[in-house]
Length: 282
Image (cartoon, rainbow, N blue to C red; front, side, top):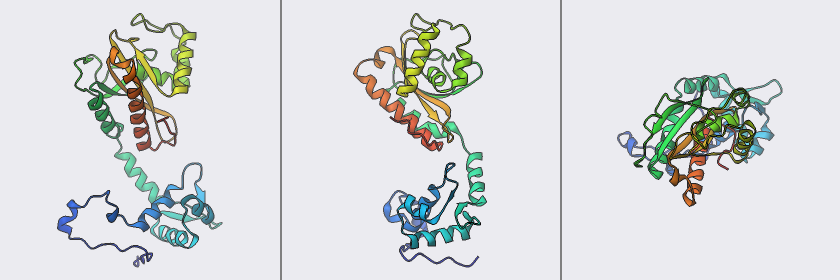
């Protein structure tokens, strides 16, 4: 392939390769504007807009037609985009192949780990990552903070009932098929605060879905409170939940507002890393 000309706007600095590790990747001086612009063009494509014309891409990125056309020609030449018979643009198979590589190396736990650690360290309680299972919510990761209360029997691999505890209740609220199946069976009481009335539980689930988070106050374990929020995948469906659990007294009063905000932010961050189109931070 013959060399591709620079767009005339960016000078790529020559650096001493022995000092490459010292460069800060988030330093604006190390960014190449033409690459950023090309990335903006690629970001304009999604499942709802798989094919875009020059005018649409200009509107989506704010770039002028001359710059956009040059970048698109380069992306087509590289195989990242292809032209349709009508002259529009769509994502090429080269990008699909690259995405397949990313998916093959993808781990939900890896993507969630920084957010879980941050929650546990900030509040001192235990952060959980759960996914839906046939018999209940399955804990697939957890990190303990400095709190003296440690719920030892809720570890990785533990399955929790959907109608109690913050993480499982969140799943029940956001997955209609799961909700319908689970509420068709008798609801077991775990503490005196467990909701067993179907109508009452339905009302609670509707509120959770509207508010975007769940508060658990001793409904599964006496003395334990928790807050959870949903994590969505790139199709907008619930993939998992993030929750923070600890002494019930810490999940009441003024601190509860901060916990809710932090848990929702953690869930939104993980959702974004999964490619979710939804804004779940509230």
